[in-house]
Image 1: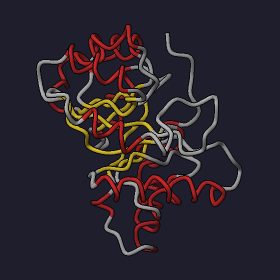
Image 2 (image 1 turned 180 degrees about the horizontal axis):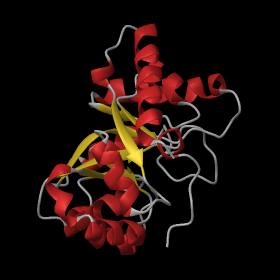
Image 3 (image 1 turned 30 degrees about the horizontal axis):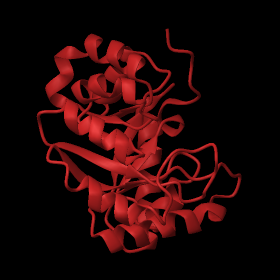
Image 4 (image 1 turned 45 degrees about the vertical axis):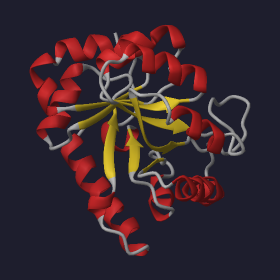
Length: 223
């Protein structure tokens, strides 16, 4: 694993994708997804200049954040995986922003557990895959209106996970649809794009990209 070299190459690819659509690389925030990697890897990534990290699982994140307590003030932690309602109390303690609010019920529970104004993103199942969570595109307008009434949550944008494919161009319509929804709702962020499709996501307006493998290589089993 050579995080510094991988990051350098990744930054070049981000810059080229931005250039193709007349965007600035500073308009895209890189979130390093550390699922399956130990705290020592996160320390190395931080030394290379990364300060935004994403985790998928509450218990795994809890262990790592405890081990990395000395870096707490320097890092921003994103919850990017499916959030079960019974883990909501812990999630608001661990994370600075939650990407995966996928129902009004979950939003209400998270709102009740936090005393601070917590930034959130609403997950949209643009592709309609039954294996994925999230609001349908038809639901998101009304859901946003309802969740905006919750006093402790701040809706910062929308998130989606595109279908797995060998051809990133096939998921461009998914990213484009999310961008159109974001524009209708006048929100700030689009969290979309991972290692296999982030360049297309950037071309379609992503402001937050969630990258694991392109930085860290293949995941290992976290113990």
